[in-house]
Image (cartoon, rainbow, N blue to C red; front, side, top):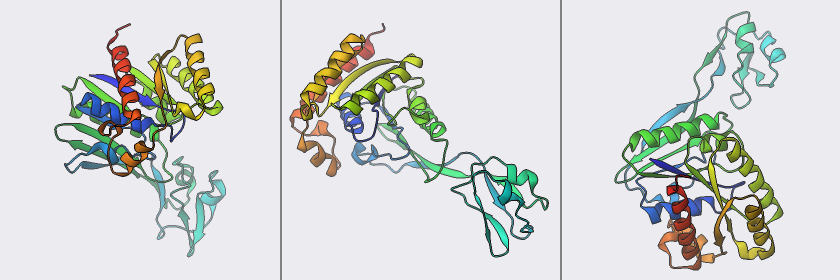
Length: 289
């Protein structure tokens, strides 16, 4: 299975629009949404079967037994995350503040605090003619990188015979992005024609270089600032990074998404540009160099 990852330096650049179109163009038998903080690929995936949903357990959280609690306040005094509060004559743990360090459980004189598994999110697997894995992290939970890795693993295990997998990655350059990039064959970076877009691109290229993943770059909504779009292409040329094309701003894109459709299903300039970018990207993916 060859894995193509679609990345962007921030949300809203057109990463999911590109991924959804690539899935449709390729008729990929396996795909995944690794933006676990705000997944949205399912909106245009058109999966008709109900998913297999399982709980994802992240780090443990502290839980106080009110029957044992002496309300001595040692846990609150020693919690560096201010995750303990007094209520009704005993202490309580704020689940959003708790980082699972275990200090409170270690110092509690009444043995009233225990560390318990915490359901930090939901992982969904759709299996029909195509396999689609996605997940959503609960608010205030960490370890999103671990959940991203789990999404990719579940997808691969459920579709062992698939030749190609398209992965909608997490935005930014943090832990979930590193987990998204790890183990893929190639990453396509979607950026915008702006100073921040170029800055985000440079950071993603550095991250990809460290992880030794082949990359290509395209610019979305290039006509919003053609000069900056050309600057990004010139930068890629100078750095010997493959540039695969420009995408125009197209009102039909938002209209298609609002109707739960991929841009690949709509006759519009953006679809044509995406098709050209797809063809170039797939040629690069097949190139073993």
